[in-house]
Amino acid sequence: RAATSMSQGSCAFFRERTRHRAPSTPAMVAKLTKVSAKDGKATLGVKAPKALKKTQAGQHHLNSGFCIGTSLAGKACCEPAAVKGVPYCKKHMKEGDSSLKVCKHPLAGNILVAARDLPKGYRIPLWGKLTKKKDMTSKSMEWAFDITGGWFLDPTKCPGSLIQFCPCPGPHEIAVLSVTPVNAARGTQYGSWPFVVNQKLKKNFQVTLQYGSNGKESDTFFEERGIKRLDIGTKANPAVRRKDAPKLR
Image (cartoon, rainbow, N blue to C red; front, side, top):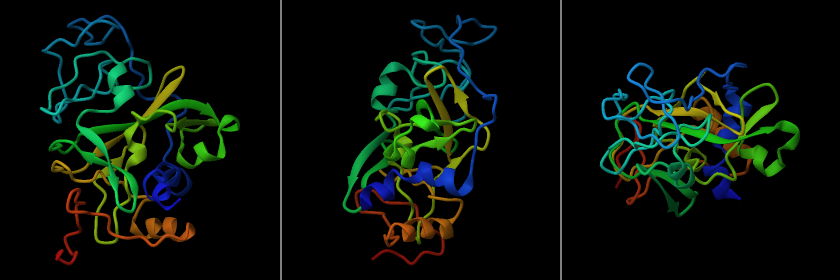
C-alpha cells in the first residue's frame, strides 16, 4: 500500500538503515513516586505542581513522571504518566498529544501535522508495546523500532503513538523531526523513544521525518517499494521546504 509505505514505514526504516538503538540499560524510565519539592516526581492521582520546572518548549521533562503532552494553548498537562516507559497520561496515550493531529493526505494517507505553532525542541516520543522479536507479526515488524536485546517497540495497536503517522519529506522538503540517539525508556509493558522538533513549526505544517539518515536513503526506501518519492506539501498542510527549493506556483 503506497499510503502506508509513505507514512508509517519510517520506524522500520530507521531500524533497517540507520540502526539507531537504545542502550541495554534504559537511560530514562519515568518513576511514579510521590511528588515533593526535593525530587519533583509524580504519583498516580497527584497533579503536577505549578512550580515544577519545564523544558524551554514548555513540556514536563521526560524523566519527571508527568505527562509531556500540551494543550492547544501550549499549557503543559498536569496529569502523571499513566505507565512506566511512556511519558503520557492515560488521556494522551489514548488520543495523542493535543498539540498534534492526524490528517488525511491525498497521496500519503494519514499524516501528522502541528495542531498549533510548535517551538523548537518540542519532544514527541514514539511509544508502543514492548514485544519480543519472535512475537512480532510481519505487519507490525514493518513499523516497529528495534531497542536491542531482541526487544521492539510496537506502536501499531497504539493510535496515540503519533510518530507512526509522520510523512517523509519530498526531494525539495526537509525533515522537521530528529531522532535522539540514546534516550530509550522502558517499563514493564511499554517503552518509548523520543524525537525532537528541530525548528519552529507553524500550525498545520506537516511533522516530517526522514525515512533514513538523508535524502538519498529516503530515495532508496521508496525505490525498493516501487514508489516515486514526491514533495508532499499541500495548501492545507504545507511541508517545510529546502532553502534551495524552487518557489511554489
